[in-house]
Length: 236
Image (cartoon, rainbow, N blue to C red; front, side):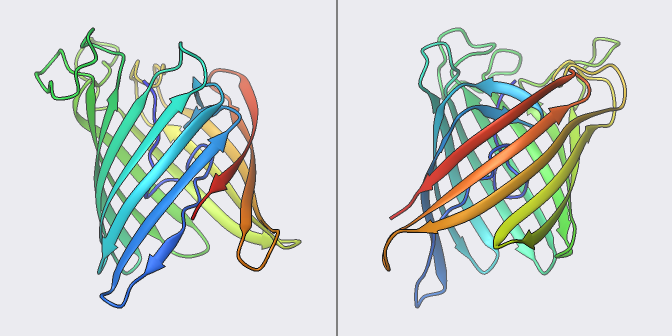
């Protein structure tokens, strides 16, 4: 399976949005990332991709849409909706992932029938302490994987991230793991599937125009693969 996730995880290619604070207290986000490769939680999900984001937030309650379209015809198209809530250092959320490929051969979006849908519903909970960010994700319904005995796995993934700044660059080190057997992440037991180092730098061209550029080195000890991704963010 493929994806992103966006609001509460360290994204495979860390999306950076622009926020506009209005007098009403409503904050909006509008951005689009262009990435050299789509890697999610240590998994290959596509080649060069465009990944737009549109979101709205009020008093900790947020709703966002995120998508990914690859430049190659074989790349899977993705459209995700996330409802989240943040209070203090804690956050919870539910994401509806949709892919044009999967159990539903025609790729119909409004088909949620069990065992024949291309939707996947994931719940998450986490805490951001500033110096460390811990997130847990579990698939609760939809096109999930199975465990070694053939039953629904309720596939889970957790990640620990440590942000810091150095040499005018924002950095983040993240380690993610799958706690138990599931073919959704192609693991038969506990496995570390994502070790990532991300760097972000905003390049300012004029007083009114700046271009955030990011790079990421990702290693997946489970699959014994490594990736180097670069990208930039377009924003109004």
